[in-house]
Length: 501
Ligand code: URP
Ligand code: ZN
Ligand code: ZN
Ligand code: ZN
Image (tube, rainbow, N blue to C red; front, top):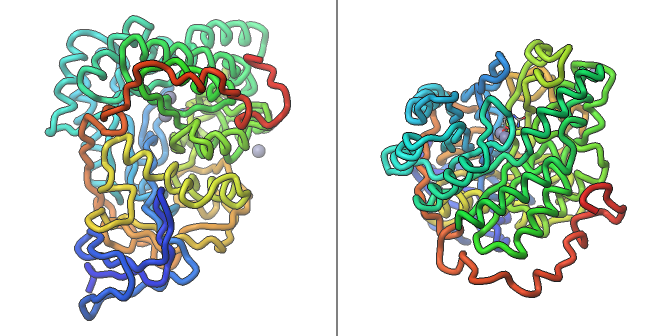
């Protein structure tokens, strides 16, 4: 029958271990995990011999249908979640981004309207605090209630005159998060430095996509990471730094951990481990502009491997995609001014295969750590664990049967995104999903995609995550041995760094 399924002979991989076990699913829930299970007749069997049975991926950073610089992101909640499922991701968390002075509740309702009938898998929402006033605080108090189910708020230190908060407002927003036991998320780049550098570059005639990174190099990110951590410490708040794109950013986060009393989490992106900043300098505008996102891909060629190592070493806890795809015609808005190029890249589909290729196939991390950073850690941080992020009895049957030998070449010609470009074009990967099960339904069936529009549900994320706010999370004082930690030891790849030396 449709609602009964057994996955046999596979190796179950969770963040804390792997074991040869069968998994029996009924009505969207994992009902039994073990060997020689006794199950009803008529149950469909998937043979997972030689395959890994892992929790479906959780991508906690997407922007489906986002409007920016006069363009709208190509992947909507249908095509975006369809691409997610094709790549093994069964939960996404998107960002509600209110306009300046717009009610957060109204923006939230708009996002629900855009998403609820389109999503192919479960989804949650973060809400952007893109302006500040006492009324915003009142709306945050409502958003964290059971009715709305939001437990995380994103603040921007960049995008001056659009979403940027000053330090006073950022401090207030973080205090409010701490009061509500919600998690503040920060886009860490110094927007004022970026604004001034942009003026200078444009005046000097640097108008192409190469100007993007030049206006916001690594130290502009590292400074903001440090400042965000300081403000969080003053506000006695935990902090989650989204899309960390550089070795400088990781180093500043790790340094902050030596003195911080509250938990600090870091996220990096598939784009960062899967490609590099050289593409922004491609002579072809289409190619270069397609790689423009913020913070930018870095010119330092050691960055991708350093970010894989940071994920492996727990300096960074999560890999997301920041999927925010714009067609070539939309990127052309910035043809004569790099600062007008709509920001964003693909990644929701290829995030897992890219990390597998770059970090597991190279021996940088094992499959358990892969599960931790692609799924379980996000589930714990955003307080949906063990419903999500775990293959265990009573967890949702969101499962990927991963074939570590499946080979394919990533291409816009075959990807499931709506967008006409793929930043991983031509990359050969070994390891991809063979089956993807969403709430007990086989949505990728031996490589064949069979998603259902509107099948996913809105996922409420309650405040007060034990990992973020639980016993022992707030330290009385920094651990002395951390003060002597050589933070360059594993993060950098040997060569002396030009930044924050
Ligand atoms: O370039 C990016 N990252 N676009 C999406 C908006 C954001 O800052 O996350
Ligand atoms: Zn951002
Ligand atoms: Zn090109
Ligand atoms: Zn983003």
